[in-house]
View 1: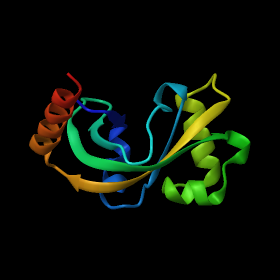
View 2: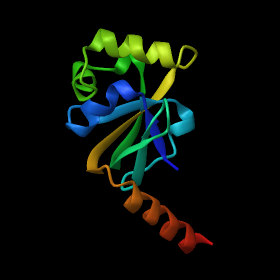
View 3: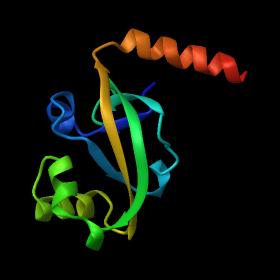
View 4: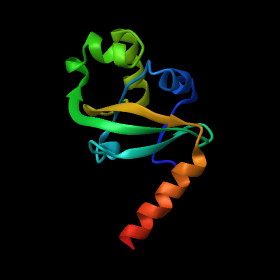
Length: 121
């Protein structure tokens, strides 16, 4: 099971380190710095990498900058358009900054989840 998903069109940018943030709605604002997340594709939930959350902070569309767009590997206008398309009724978003930990190691990711779950049961 993956902790977070991305549209398939973002997979190559994440794996190449060109996409280092994601902007999400409140439902995914619970992540915190230091969290290690298994990442899957939205379309088929297929695991493709593991990331570490570096920070999570609230933001509005008007507060987005060219730097945010660069971290998303797109232009600012395109970024705002993509966010509006995904979250048409939202006003406040959360910027999740992350770094790539490893890729294509689903077995390790599954094993880490099982070990973590055992610690809390």
